[in-house]
Figure 1 (tube, rainbow, N blue to C red):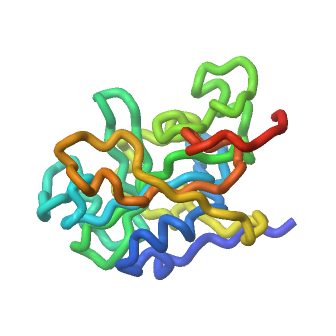
Figure 2 (figure 1 turned 60 degrees about the vertical axis):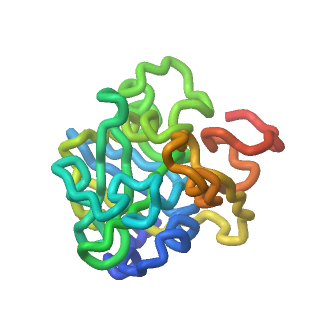
Length: 211
């Protein structure tokens, strides 16, 4: 069986972050950390279009030590710590100095499930093991140390997969938008694969099946 084809960095260079957020669905994210390989199909994403997007860490062109990776050329990881605890994996898009990013919200585990269970302290495999951005980052072994890392590297990469490209995409408002985001809180820039049980918070539950 051939190795999955890693996406070229040119894939991320478009300034249409919403389109890339949809295109990332069905792709395979893989990490090789501490001699452990883990991977999963991306099943849920959110687009953040800084600097005009009030939901973005780079709104208004804000540049800080925390978000500086967002200003890198597309094809790098932006990893930040939420609430001082949870690592969050984001895909930087667009040319350099245009701070667009896609949050990876959920994955469907493929490789290294036992390693994911140990990292997440989960005894039995469940749909909830990677159904959230903090959960999947821990499962994949992602920490703040990967902030700014190329997504075409031996440590972390995103590849094409054998998922049927004809799946349906559900869109809706992004999760956890605060009141000060205003009307941007209602932008339908959250995307997920319809009927996939690994999605974090489906707009409606219409799937069946077991692990």
